[in-house]
Image 1 (cartoon, rainbow, N blue to C red):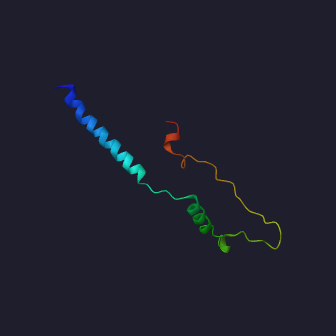
Image 2: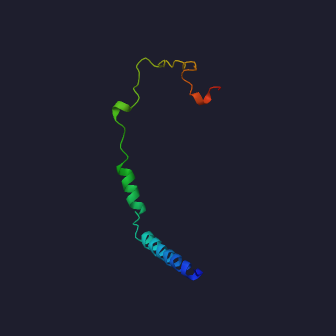
Image 3: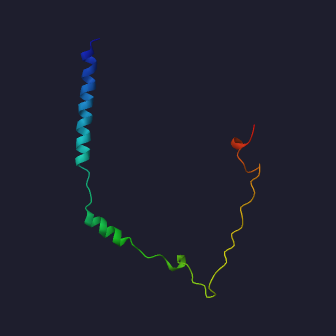
Length: 83
């Protein structure tokens, strides 16, 4: 078989792909910076009062943060245990 017959389909495929790429990149709409600012401002909603930190009347609050449990063989994946 000649090399020309093999390269011709590859060349047509490459030209078709190039045409598709140029048509898809030009048809993509982009928003302007003014629309972005308006959207960002509209989405700037204050947090719900239930999620705001409450102000305690007594002053400082003690938070109990218990230490994590000691690692055991039963909780360790077999991948990290000696064979």
